[in-house]
Image (tube, rainbow, N blue to C red; front, side, top):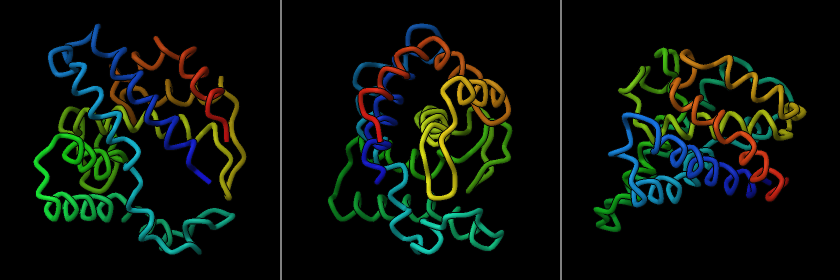
Length: 191
């Protein structure tokens, strides 16, 4: 049910990184190769959800505190799965390395209030910071078993409201520069 979520967030990550590349202190880090690697790794951000019981993952209402604790483990479980795959494949490439960072840290928050490690600011790997904005925007815009989608303008306001608390301010600025293209991607791969 979330196949197009994966495709959209992949393209949002690519678009955000490209927007950030030309206008920030990260321009040396954001090469064509690294942007491609991060975009190719992005679809693995929620791989750990396969280890979450369906009665929690597909619950049509709000999660209890205990259920939310279990749901939050998906980031660490995904990281562990990818680390094992990388070791078994004897992979020293950059895509799985990026996927490890994204899977584990895409729920960290700029202010340190996220999970699983409570990282803050630039301690959060840049591809995970890009994924955070991409994932939250798409989640806000998508129907889920527990909620209806928000409209585009409301989702944009929510992202902007998280600037400097939930999200890296520079990534939010990059998002605002490409918001029309984000809408185009959303329309291209609807649910």
